[in-house]
Amino acid sequence: MERPPLTKRLKRYLRYLLIAGMLRLLQFLPLGAARTLGMTLGGWAYALAGGERRKALKSLARAFPERTGAERDALARDAFRHLAAAALEVASARALEAGLESLVSWPDADRQVLEAALAKGKGVVFVSGHVGNWELLARRVARAGYPSQSIAKETSDPRLTALVEDFRAKGGVRSIWRGQEGAARAMLRALRSGEILGILIDQDTKVQSVFVPFFGELAATPRAAADLALRTGAAVVVGFCQRDGAGYRLTMEEVPHPDAAEREAAVQALTAALSQRIEAAIRRAPEQWVWMHQRWKTRPPEDVPPALAGAPSAPAR
Image: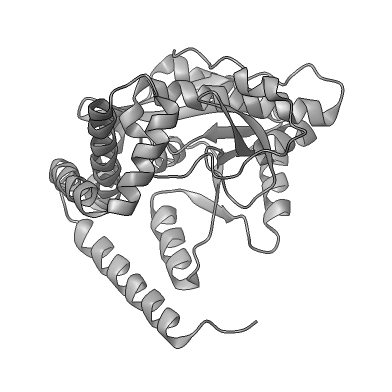
């Protein structure tokens, strides 16, 4: 395999050094200070990162055409602030280690949803999105002692991937890097061992996808969660870790397998049901989603039934 140009390798190395150094420094921050600093940095990023700001505003215009420009502008700014605060909260590792249970509440009713799904004995495909603080979601479940792994996308720099893997592992989160050799076997092995397999499906990425409605428009959505659940018989749980005051709250819901005889129709139906739950979570707190992501970048082929785009959105719980 051809090596990247020297300038690109240098940029990657400098980026790795910067991130590694920041993680070492930020681990000592108290959670409140981390949150405050993150909100400040997020506000600066909104003002300075014009390209990302324009992407966020474009996405918000598609999702909330009924809102005014000023409302969408305020929502985008809040999204930048939330994302930066969430990242720094995770980075403040020492305070997080000591205070995770108090920071992230997990009501008994929602915990019982997960336990009932695990009791079926075929593993759990746990679906979420880039909503609230997905890293804290994985840590909270792992800290509670549930055997779990998360599917993640490796970075372009193996050193950075290793750094992220080590950082997550210290928080009890085991990762399966989807592009690495043996990843598919590892996913199946986890489910057949009765574990929880976490996967995020709310982004338009270069993976096998199906088109399902998302805020009234068809969006390319990863099909892996539905494929894995239908192939193995694993239960499907959708859950989120959304900001609630100074902390977060976990919510969980089991989603039944669709009653469809044809496999492809079942994949389509289950992926659509999961995407509806993600949309509902975003609608509950729209400032807690990554609007700078180009969710509708890939357009559907002409043979996709247009009626799919008009499917109703899931109501907020």
